[in-house]
Amino acid sequence: MDGMASFGYWVRRRRKALDLTQEQLAQQVGCAEVTIKKIEADERRPSRQIAERLADSLQLAPAERAAFVQAARGELAADRLDLSVPPTTPEAAPLPGGTTTFLFTDIEGSTELWDQHPLAMPAALQRHELLLRQAIAEHRGVVFKTVGDAVCAAFASALDALAAALDSQRALVAEAWDANRAPSWAAPARADGAAHGRSRGARGRLLGPPLNRVARLLATAHGGQILLSRASAELVADGLPAAETLLPSLLNAVSARDAACVLVLDDYHVIEAPAIHAALTFLLDQLPPRLHLVIASRADPPLPLPRLRVRGDLTELRAADLRFTPADAAYSGLESALAWMPDRDGPYAAAYQARHESVPTLSYLATNLIRAFGETVWYERWAAITVAELRRTGFNTIANWSDWEVARAAQFPYVRTLDLVFERTPYIFRDFPDVFHPAFLQEAARLAEPLRATAADPALIGYFLMNEPSWGFGGMTPAAGMLFATEACATRKVWMCDGWRTKTSSARYSPTKRWLPVNALMKPA
Image (cartoon, rainbow, N blue to C red; front, side, top):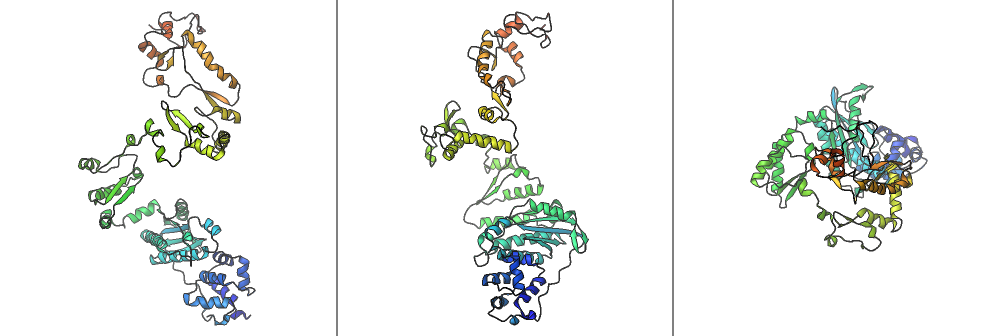
């Protein structure tokens, strides 16, 4: 075929005019690079479907598409295509000089979209880039680089960059991503990042720290977000209208609605800008009846709360209102609200527990484990998963209230919890036992006996005495509490009546002689 009149020659000229490589064109069309090579060499005719995608990627005008597809299929002579004015690259707009604001965009999850929908993505990406370029050009920006589905633009004004980002997001939301061009699941969820600074040019290229900063800023954004660096935010702040100018429009729009509106501001404690607090105060003063404001914060916001309380316009829910009581946490009475409750005497019996003075409770974790792994092996499967996850996440110890037998079997470092319940030994101060009582040594030996089996276990690293001992709170030590708050006990008798043996510093406690180490205690006056 005559090279000047061949379809492949036309495709090659058009591709080069658009500054596309064969690999890039193949990616946009959704075919192999070798397919593009064969089409341009006139060794293969594209299918009608590929021809239509080529028309999209080569940016043909609607009036040219039908003839292009016919020429691709051999239904129209290639010399009928207009080659009198070969495609040329439009002259690029000059890059802004001096201090510049950069806008980077990207499509969230584009790799997964390409894997799932390789046929629809080329059209979606083409439309996506067209919308971006239109918004950027309308606000005097210049696209200086594209990488895959990412677009990099430069602006002489931070306000122009922000306006382009907003307009492009609105255009993407308003676009009808129908099945003929791009299904709704292929609609790009784009994230934008803008940073401000000076760049160094090298052979027409933009380089420098501002580009690195905006790339890192973009990496933290989610689809639909527009993030600004602090410098860019400060620049646009002076050019934005005051909140008092914008809020009346919001209030008027809400007042015109028939239905009530709820505005939720979460994590308000992170707001530090006085302008935002002032704007919200203005909103509260002008709040229409149909608009309800909900603020979630870890601290009282700097708003006129006393005035709102006096007027009866404030409803407060604080920690005490949200805290569950043991009765609230019990399942009694909630059975009717649940779609399913396991039988207490059936295979889910192990999921029922008794806590808070025998208030019945149900472990949803155990219930789901039994449902997943069965009544007989659920605990073993849970143990294996737990130990593996602890090791994977870098934990190195299992502490109190955990199942030490699971750790022992896996040789995972653990501690054992001591069940210090004395039956005959009295307590001298809160929950501190009378260690000089004759029954203490016998009961201590009884409590220590179950620990003998793990005494030599190298994975055992210690013992847990008790949780939040009451004798450890307050300003009084157990010794002072025993002396001043306990009328009679064996320990008090040893200290106050029998006297202290001070003949030798090597003295030791004996159940018969009751000697104490003098280097550890001071003799009372």
